[in-house]
Length: 502
View 1 (cartoon, rainbow, N blue to C red):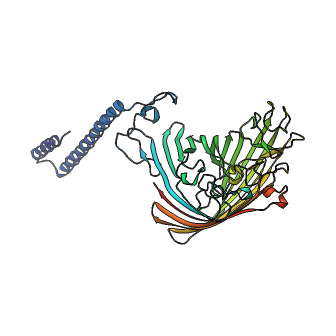
View 2: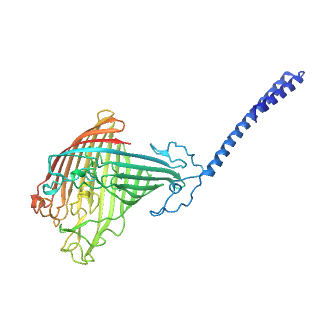
View 3: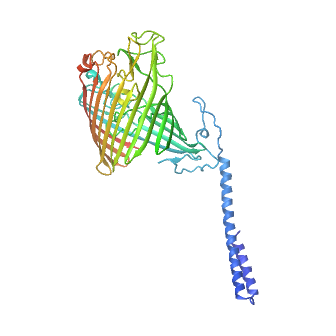
């Protein structure tokens, strides 16, 4: 209803009042009140009509443009895809303008209700190797991975190397559905392999260590394992990070909370790596478990302390039914074993500072620590096979991890990292040869100590310098045949790193 209509009504009412002059004063007041009520009702009706027209216009535009895809076709690597197949596009989707999303730093994909966040890092690291070189220091696996017998893969000690391998791109999405939040995470890095040559340090293979999807409480795809919380990774300057327990695998996870604690339960693709007499890897079939590995983690605060406990239970084995693999294991021989592990962790906030400690213990377990997992020449990490009995002997490994981070001011901090592990692969696993030419020996002990100073030059630019001391002991190293006669390999490294995030 337009304003001139309201004016006509007001004029008519005023004329009526003037014509009834003989009326009493209280009658005039009643008429005025009724007139004001009429005007107020007319105003409310007008506002409601305007809102209805806007809503109807928006609904028509949306319904013409967006259609909810209730049953999209399963994507196939060979068939072409359209944008409509990739995003949730409900009837009430936003228009084609770009607006902020639900994730930190995200935006809504135009025309959808899907939030998309893109982030990553570009960095360069420099290391001065003052001892036995561990090879490709810039790789995903760098954590003081010393080589036996003084093997210097990158040209020996006292070497200065600059590299730009460990860069990353992260893409995350989130949208709401009847099943809860639907999210995806894709992390692409350039540090999958170590460089074959020093002059090829910027040429490497790209891979996706994380490629997972979450639907409500469920997560599936390539993801980090629940045995480790990730809290043990204190800030480091060396490119590879701290040598904590590390695990990545295709897994199915359920996460939730209750009783004052958070929990994660995973079914993980089984894996088995076995050695026989320390000379050859078993090449038989079915060397991993028949059932998925079970991993879990519970977390809860205990006063000011953040406590969590990781667990794993697995079955693994081998079946040399083809007579292949190590010739010392009889053709047709087979065995299986049960492995398990515990990983309690505590983290104590001290203002801006943080104190962390964790102890991982496994018997025939997997992913006990990064050095055993990624030491490519390591032997007997999970277990060994006795060639006389053809039975599996579980390897017992325990590792300790701790760090303390102190903030000097809002942009400068220092972290002292202490890590170490002992492992007892069977005495049958003994390396032979010299300078890593022949059979690599098993890793039995290692220690890592590092300290650094890190500061932020700008909100997205961070740099730091640090010192790392590594020592490792290999059974059968330096042509010895017993652990007592071995000599440790050591290295003292100096590091500088600069990172720009986006």
